[in-house]
Length: 355
Image 1 (cartoon, rainbow, N blue to C red):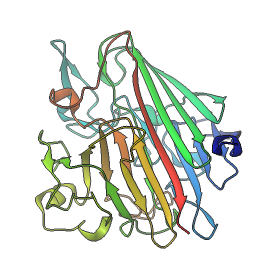
Image 2: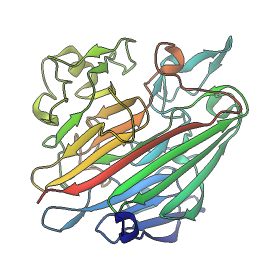
Image 3: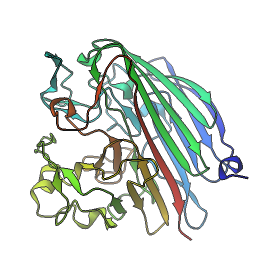
């Protein structure tokens, strides 16, 4: 019998009332192996990931809250630092909140003035998705109208969250458009493998299979070059504690107030591990495999102590995505989506614990 057959996934759902008078759904995926995932159709958001430690204890390793009132909905001013949310239409930043496509300039929402960030004033993280149960998980769909946040084309998006092989959370995105546009979707989880109530993720070991990274200006816009990681605080080709060089005397550490940089993956394939996050104290390990070309490492430098997070650097985001500002950088891997095409990305998070 295969591991997949042994670890049958049970899916449960319940409705939660929101402060604006609408409701949202919470879904729980349980594999019977200790791995349990809770998510919501509000923002296609990961709410919690419970994983065993080396002694069999189970903790939530994802920052966030089971109270959906803590998360923004369309029209609210509440910020949640995109904890666990699906970011789109375009994750990360677009410089100057503008780009030119087929000779036409598009002005998109400048919600990180003067730049665009994670989809705009009302991004996919603040919208209700249409959810339905599927084998091993949940599929959510969303339609973004032509002109939404300034982007061209009516975009139809699907996000599927599944537990496979009992220990792996798979996050798969698909998108189609009726006009040429740009797309970059990511799941913006913040992790602390010691448990979400731990006050730091700086003691976690991190490995990233990347020889190059994207330097940034102080406003987090990439400079346009890919620089080698060798001899810098960005060399995670072998396991390093995140906090070991997070305050190093290096211009890029100063620009990001720590890590807020995209790494250009050497081999972005689902049969290759692109990154590993581990925690010695608990024995937990999270391996990341992805089909997209970049991993954005954000060390939670601006996280508040607000109940969802425990303050500065209490969690680390490792976002599988395309490079920031790609619509203005023709040398970066393309994010353009044309009618008749399907934009796809798949990321797998595999959890384990040493003996």
